[in-house]
Amino acid sequence: MTDTICAISTPPGIGGIAVARVSGPESIMITQSLWKGVDLSQVKSHTAHLGNILDCDGSVLDQALVTVFKAPNSFTGDNVVEISVHGSKYIQRQLINALISSGARLADPGEFTRRAFISGKLDLAQAEAVADMIASSSKAAHRIAINQMRGGFSKRLSSLREQLLELASLLELELDFSEEDVEFASRKKLLKIAIDVNTEVNRLLHSFKSGSAIKDGIPVAIVGETNAGKSSLLNTILGDDKAIVSDIHGTTRDIIEDTIEVGDYLFRFMDTAGLRDTTDKIESIGIDRAYSAISHARIVILVIDLTQPLNTQPLQYIHNNIESDDLTKLIIALNKSDLDGTVLTTNKIREALKDCKISSEVPILPISAKNGTGIDALLKELQKTVAANDETDNVMITNLRHCEALTKAADTSQRVISGLQDNLSGDLIAQDLRETIFHLGTITGNITSQDILTNIFSRFCIGK
Image (cartoon, rainbow, N blue to C red; front, top):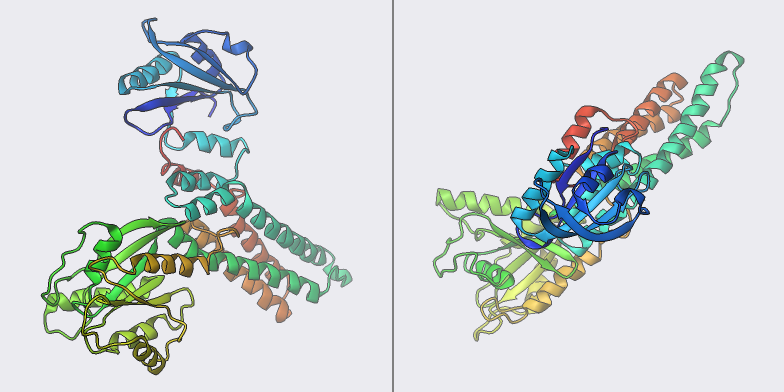
């Protein structure tokens, strides 16, 4: 990690400008060898300078703006130079070739951020948040990533580790003085610390489902009977003919999905096969997948055709599958409200909800998927439903690696609680404590390995 690396940090392709980043002990000297302008070795850190960047043959490649960041006050902790040139593919290619010819090497994926981690500028959780920040596709996802990148998650974990280390030190002292039968802290105090830590670990763990949904797109299952207007609703929301619309029953056989940003959130809408009894094997598979979509959705939109008698079977199935999950919410869309001859009313739907033991607070919205009436109200209801459970201003986790580590920490910290309650030997409790500290340490990088680092940073883009 002592050589000098370079890469284009802006997205590939043609643009107004492109930025090449150079980091390492020789970054200023290498850039100076290609530079026609002020002596970069003499300028102050965090200053920008206009001049010309030279090609390998000494000719002027482009007019450029060079920004210098001197160690240790840079992103990587090394000397860093950022070269802004015009966004021509040719200029970008020649600039990198010239930097390599002058002694730099092309950076590996994520190597700049990896160096920032190794130099102590970021911990591992913050480094991973950099990738989440780049990939964020909604305001809510950006809010989670920036909170984590600023150290919100790391501070919470640091506080937990300090409590656990205090608990471990007290137990270790008791073990050292076991022959004198000295108690450095009451079991009641130790138990309170262990319960507090376990409670917070489980809260963070519980946030993963919501956090990952916000990061990847909140799954919304559009379900209902055949010809209720599910595919038309999907097309209207997306503003595109994504799904085939037909009067033929059972047209939709598989899950059709797409994402769209609504307000602060990214939603992943899933159009499903119509729910009905059928002997068609292919359609039956589609219906099974519709039921699976209900089980995995955060929001279920039940589309009901107002011109047809109410079938309560979908309501009953929805109740059975989301009853135990307080994160899954139901919205009922009464479609074809623009047509004459409707046979259903909101009161009838409310009565059916009561019979199926579903909350009467479920939103019921009249819409017309065909002409767009009520769609704006439906989208607002989706935002309202998510916002009611939005904890993005608090610490949330979105990373599967963090989830796995917290799962292990929750298990071992629960064993600490059980051991204290059952008055187990201090050395057994101390072992569970050490394991809990270890699992939390793997998240921030206090405890890590080259294999873990390679796996994490290989997912980054080159230039970051």
